[in-house]
Amino acid sequence: MRLMVITGASSGVGRATALRFASEGYAVCALARSANKLDELVVEAVGKIYPYPTDVSDSQAVERTFAKILEEHGKIDVLVNNAGVTTGGRPIDFAMIDRIIDTNLKGTLYCTFAALPSMRQNGGGHIVNVASIAGVNISAQGDDGLYIASKHGVVAHSEALGRLVRRDGVLVTALCPGGIDTPLWNDENPYPYDEGMMIQPEEVADLIAYILAQPKRTLFKNVIFVPVVEQW
Image (tube, rainbow, N blue to C red; front, side, top):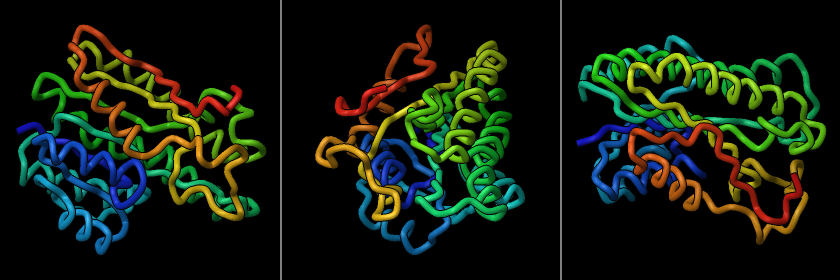
């Protein structure tokens, strides 16, 4: 049985992806801050989802969680770094800077380097970093420069890491979606186009499944996936 670790699994893309892959026979280790929401996910799932309440911005918590995953399951085949936050339209202060960078960028790095030794030891794996169109287009997130910076970091990290670990059989994909129908959009941070045209979380899960189904001689490196109403 292949094992997937996915962060930000309690809602949105993470939740949809966890449910999708559990139903297809993966053992899914679901990480999120909310233990209650993870428990609800386990109940809803058709298949095996293992909850690991974890704040990915906490390096020691990530280290403990991945050590536990490897102790209990023995390996990691796929890592989906999906956890992310935005400013939500709120003013930027030092605490906000820490929250965005620690979750979006450092959280991705923590989880990646916690999973890599297992992948290398087992002869391969796949890391999917859910970045954003804002990671490749500065105008895509309006004036939210902090979020843009964090997602550019994720895309750059994906490119650099991919070159380094491909020789070990580890593939790295940066997924750069546009507006997705998730709680990240709200009254203070409204979607600037027709909300009916937004990407659905299940469609992102479908795309991840397609990427992972490709032969290992091919690689989707940077995948841009946007609603047609977004003009980038």
